[in-house]
Length: 108
Ligand SMILES: C[S@@+](CC[C@H](N)C(=O)[O-])C[C@H]1O[C@@H](n2cnc3c(N)ncnc32)[C@H](O)[C@@H]1O
Image (cartoon, helix red, strand yellow):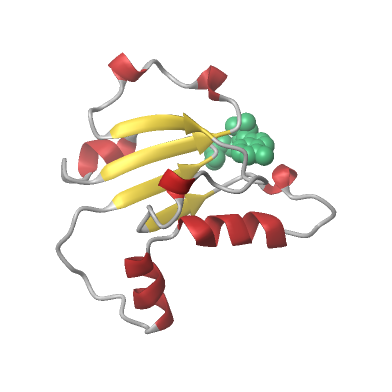
């Protein structure tokens, strides 16, 4: 929510959590923020694959089963945009102009 206030309005921020019970109603959110229900241990739906330029994940260690984060990390990588995947793998982390889609796992 703090990021939404500071970022340009063109930045879209989505908060994902398995349980949206604690999230404020959409009407009280900044226009560039929304929440979606998602289980990190399941395949992301098609419209979330390759969608996000930046993924921030914090304090969801309890989600990891048997001390093996492989499944969760694979699902997160599926959701990273081709643009960001290429920039990371090529070491191209220079600023650029585009509409960013940011995903915050486990709420914003
Ligand atoms: C300790 S809270 C952290 C919330 C937030 N990320 C933060 O840093 O303040 C853990 C969150 O993970 C969510 N969670 C638990 N299992 C999950 C799963 N399989 N997929 C997605 N979210 C999950 C819980 O609902 C809870 O909101």
